[in-house]
Structures are given as structure tokens and as C-alpha cells.
Image (cartoon, rainbow, N blue to C red; front, side):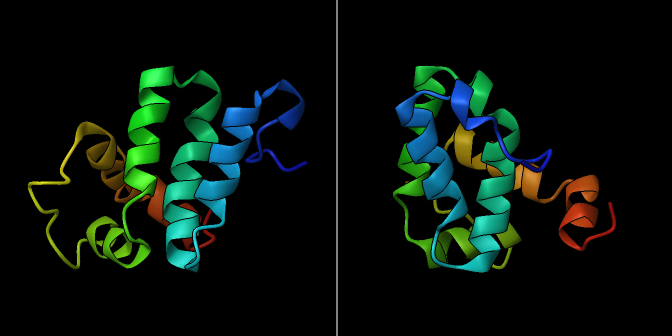
Amino acid sequence: MSLDTPDFSTLDPRRRRIYFRATHRGTHETDILIGGFVTSRLAAMSDDEMDALEEVMDLPDADLADWLSGRKPVPADVDCPMLRAIIADANDPARQAAIRGER
């Protein structure tokens, strides 16, 4: 198991589903951006945070990729703290270096 992968033996079924869904989005870009955010935080997330995360993950993948990469602004009707947290993580310089393989 890599250091980035949660220990599934300690995760409840809901967290395992969320992890799989976050890392198997349909596009490689969102797999990395959303999956990376979720991987490091999932074990400590509250039920409310997981609810908010699932709402974000219900949004269309192409739109998420545009918003997370900054290609398009986030529309007011979907703007929320969880989406903002994922965007901040995606734009963190250390995270960008990791995405480029410069760990």
C-alpha cells in the first residue's frame, strides 16, 4: 500500500465508496485533483463534510475540471466551502509539484 492510499481496513463502507468515487472520476485530471484532496483528509472527515464532498462529486466532471484548474470561474449556485477547499488544495504549490511528480 502506498503512503497516499488510506488503510481500507480502518475505513467504514461509506468512506471506502467516497474514496473510490473520488479516485475514479472519469478523467485523469479530476481523479488526481479530487482524489488527492480526499486521500489525505477522508479518515478525519465528519458526516457533514462527507455530505458536502458528495454534493461536489455529484457535479459534472468536465465542469469540476474547469473550476479546479481555474479555466472557468465557479458559478455562484454551486460555490460552497467544500469546493473552495478542493480548489485551494489543487492550487497549492506543493500539491502542484506533487502532481508534476516533483515530490
